[in-house]
Length: 167
Image 1 (cartoon, helix red, strand yellow):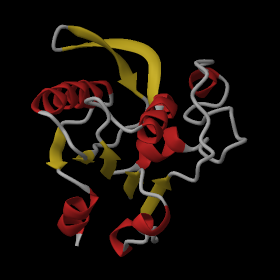
Image 2: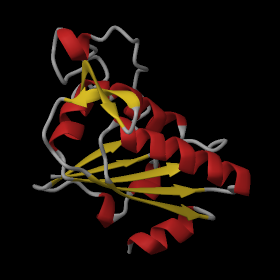
Image 3: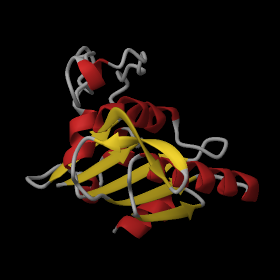
């Protein structure tokens, strides 16, 4: 399954390449996502699934754990994801286990699912060199934490350039 996460809203989201299908799931901003409250229920009470079902984003951990390919489209904000995409990544914590292992001399959580994810991150906006470096560092750390080995990071000056790359 392919998973697409994007922060486009309104007309910007009406791109055929960002549509759900039989083999593609889309997580988009409907303006209702709640932040992770750090209760760890997705680890212990409802493994892989957020206990907060009020906003419709409770299955993010399972989607992360069952996808083979992921496309993330986000405005770059101060060298990181947009608030919506950051919330999605916070809510995916259920895709890893509360147990630890050593990876490259560092302690990290073990994988819950056995999938291998190919991930492409596309950041857009007026991004300075320092923000680009910060984003690259943060994303690489996310890749380690989510056990992603096949990844690509692309930067675009604006939404229109990014949309052109999608078509």
